[in-house]
Amino acid sequence: MLNLSLTLAIGLPLTFLHVWSPYVHPGRYIDSRYWLPFADGISITYIFLQLLPEITHLADEVLHPDEPYVVRFSGWLEALSAWGAQNPFLPLLVGFTFFYGLERGFERPVAHGPSDGAERRVHFWVHMFGMSLYKILLGYLMGQITSVSGLLIFAFAMTMHFLVIDFHLLEMHRSAYHRIGRWILSGAFLVGWILSTQVEIAPPVLAMLVSFVAGGAVLMVIQDEFSESHDNSYAAFLIAVLLYGSLLLVF
Image 1 (cartoon, one colour):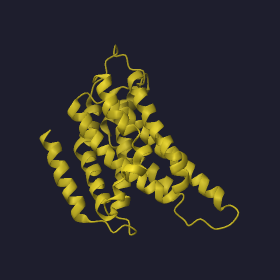
Image 2 (cartoon, one colour):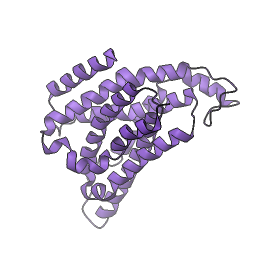
Image 3 (cartoon, rainbow, N blue to C red):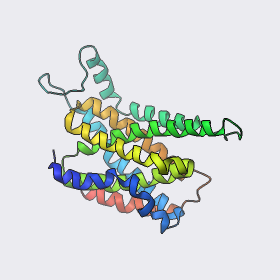
Image 4 (tube, rainbow, N blue to C red):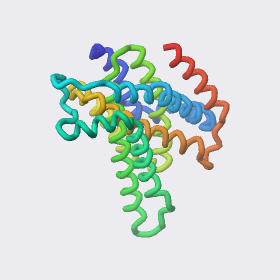
């Protein structure tokens, strides 16, 4: 594991990015048609060149009986672990479907009337539940990174990704998200990182969690880039993929 103080120095600013985002958000200076697809390009490049290879690597790791994992498969579940190693991207599909379901459940216009406020509150809390789970998993993954370069690459990609999340949650729940939502998501990421210092998860289980997270991230990028409500610049997306992809291939 990396030195704790180094992880804190990089991880804490990332943890509280949601809290600070109203003051440092690129939308204050750059048209969303350009910075959104650029951030999406960074995110999708990280997924394809870092997360997906990591999933296959973790799925292929062999467990040994004497390894002190707190979260691991045992007994008859070892068969499930072996099956999961053969199907490492199934949780990606599950994650994609899960987060898509959260979105579709509230896709219809909210009718104006006495129930309007209550339905919006339910919408907000369902989003907070799904995104908190997502952020806890990402916080745990940050704590598992074992190299400085890997931590820096992760932090840059997640900075872009978290700013996109902020943009969309502010669009949907501006007042509630600004008042409490951004604090919840920052806390969830911190909880995930703290868990990573206390809990060792067996590689096949971690592979499934990483795959699940990747499914949610892929959905968010697709929603952005194929949304009719956002006239995104393909050039900005392409530049991000080329520049960040070249960086990842070098390191």
